[in-house]
Image 1 (tube, rainbow, N blue to C red):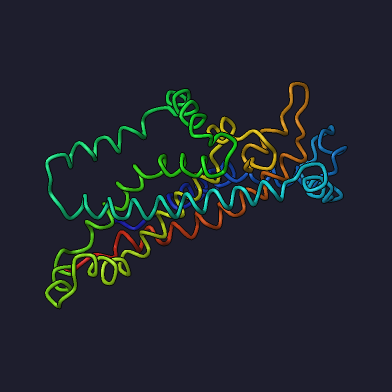
Image 2 (image 1 turned 120 degrees about the vertical axis):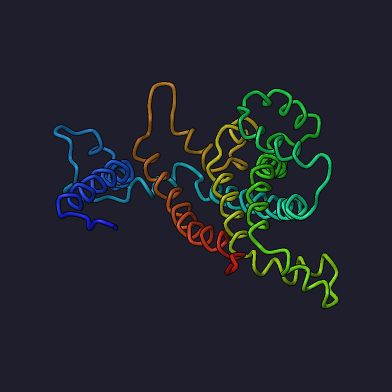
Length: 278
């Protein structure tokens, strides 16, 4: 018998959730408020948790003092190309791992998972030498290729799980009706897999959009820098431009928040897309 939740229990639960919401949302609130303060009002005493006057000077400074528009375009181009390509490759490899049995299947899955545990800086030296030999340092194409290689392993494992949730009978029925295996994949399975594919792309896009370590290493000129590299540039040896950094952070976070909310819904849909009644 399920016992009804008491009023005291509900109060404790909502109090805990409220404290957790404040704890997680306060940094975002503080960054937003800081970005809307005039540069001279950021460091005041006592601390103003709600400024008396709001200013857009920090946002205007992003485009006057720094070429922030170029950084946004670079990030969009790099993240979109890398996300789309990695998702397409991972879709095919995930399908193979889900539908076929072969000797090295377990080893490939283990390798894909192990690569996620290796710190990026371990491969930084050989990677930089390779990109230098290919003349792809300070080149957006080089950064795209690196991001594709980084995104494929985890995305493959992710899409393999989505494919395994789709009954084999659906594909077999399409092939009995005359479709080839590729025809069944692209005309039958992919429409069912659409939520999972969208979720995988958004995951790849957000990872590439937020990545700092590789972009700082491989991108040198202002015309090729991405947003995380630009944010890092607001920190100097003797000063931190908190106003500009906060404004840039707000503009950077908004697209990823929207995409993450969008991906959450599609991840749930993807997990249940292949469900059948028993």
